[in-house]
Amino acid sequence: MKYRRLGSTGLKVSVIGVGTWQFGGEWGQQFTQDEADAILDRAAELGLNLIDTAECYGDHLSESMIGSYLARRGRHNWVVATKFGHQFHERFTRTDRFSAEDVVSQLDASLKALQTDYVDLYQFHSGPDEVFDNDALWTALDKQVQAGKIRHLGTSIGSNANIHQTDASQKVGSEAIQVVYNRLDRAPEEQVFPSCIRQDLGVLARVPLASGYLSGKYKPGAVFGETDVRHRHDPESTQQKLQEVERIRRDEVPEGTDMASWALAWCLKHPAVTAVIPGCKSPEQVFSNAYAAELVEPGHPQDWKD
Image 1 (cartoon, rainbow, N blue to C red):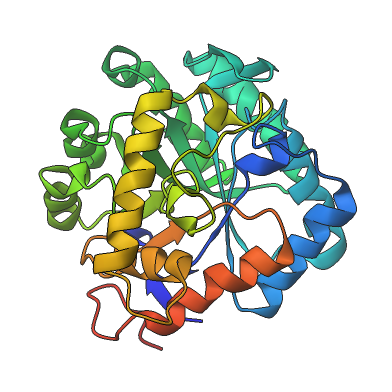
Image 2 (image 1 turned 45 degrees about the vertical axis):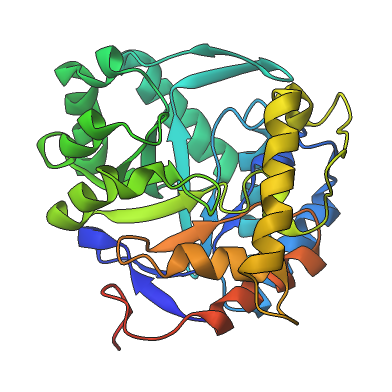
């Protein structure tokens, strides 16, 4: 496994992380604790040390599974990132909770679920600019940093081109940006990534497999079940993406190379990107994700130097 410095946080993170939205049950599968354990065990064996979750992946459900695992297997080797700002009600239904008071209560609930007394990265989660531009919110968060409950603050931008929240990172004390970035969606390259480089922000690329479309498993005409979040995607757009994936597979992916591994490594080549955080439904998918690190050439600006 390869590791990079997460911007000015100084955290040493594996270039492949473990995205855990799927543990909340919105990707067509309900997970048992044993299944979550097997995924995280495999990740640990392969050198992955970054877990990304959120309070609204289920009602702290994903966090609770991670917390149970960490309590039994150990916390110290993991970099744990979670998010705030939404309250889960039922599948695909949330309400915003971005007030200073709400965020502190959410943090305490996340810490309880994760069975830890601190999170390494606490991220503003895809909120609009009007709630982001709230000094009281960031003052309350800074107090939690001073109290030791949060090591570092981050921003998970909702729009892949949200330059306002990215540019304001140093002002509010945010040291990392999480953003959708993949071979099908390169919007961050225009403004967001240059801003991240200027400010020495760590970058976590979420949805690096384009919601699984770049996994190589799906052909044009694929249909997703009602319990799968992709069922809610625009059908015409989905088919256009799958047709483009076929072209990419034919014209860009080297023969004999697994498409999912290639797609993750493609993201990691950008000088702004620290790590990718693909979801994984099985230990086998963790192995496939981890293999992408073998395709990454050295010389990245954030490569960890012991």
